[in-house]
Image (cartoon, rainbow, N blue to C red; front, side, top):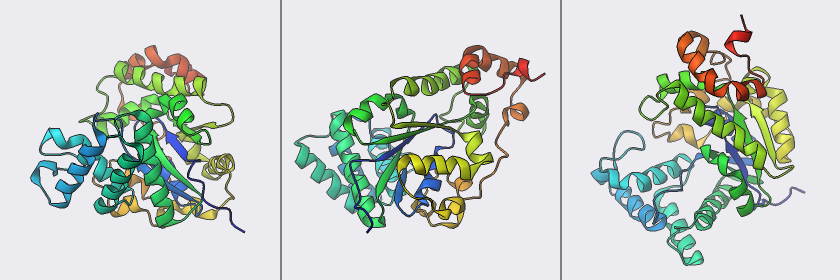
Length: 309
């Protein structure tokens, strides 16, 4: 007999932006027992609940204030709310259902969802909705850089499992420059400081037995081995579907809203992004990054430029 779904034990994925979290989430979402969503940014604005409700209604009415390329908006005031709503659409939650979930969360918490704990309550309701809609035992969510607050999330969800994917920060910087120039890091030292923060803190504050760290490079070069580590850690049986994620239907592909990683994640796993910094960055850029992040690069098993000569 198949066990019942556990909405109190989410699978929370994190990593610096462009670390492979989308690929990771799509792979796990291909598992029949897992329902894993892309990222949903829920820390802004202060009056999150009312802001989402109005933004959802404006989007349903095609109001030009909340429209724009991707998740952007014509009117900056509505960005946070409309961004949230569009991210929920990426996750398979339509506007009318989202409005009901937000209204219910606000009523049950007697709050406008300004507190962190109330925002997490809404995210859990969204996860539970997706479990009912798609079936599965566990819901999952991308935290992205919010993985740095793993201790806060662990207190909210004492049964949660956290999987942190790390990637060579030099490759990350090359990816930021090419793929997300509008909002990505602009200088090697800025990138290095941000990367060091994200790869160093979670491992020191994560709850024992509930944190798994994997490397992007290992995932794409030895996918079966690394995915098996993840499914064992989550507590679900192996499924060959995770090795054919690009052949499985995912809601993100149906409604990407210009997600920067959706197109690549819809393809078979490739090792071509590994080591791209050697092609795309100058020696000066590499040296500037390593001057800040060298110790963490070495801790994670990456070779510094002066060691590879």
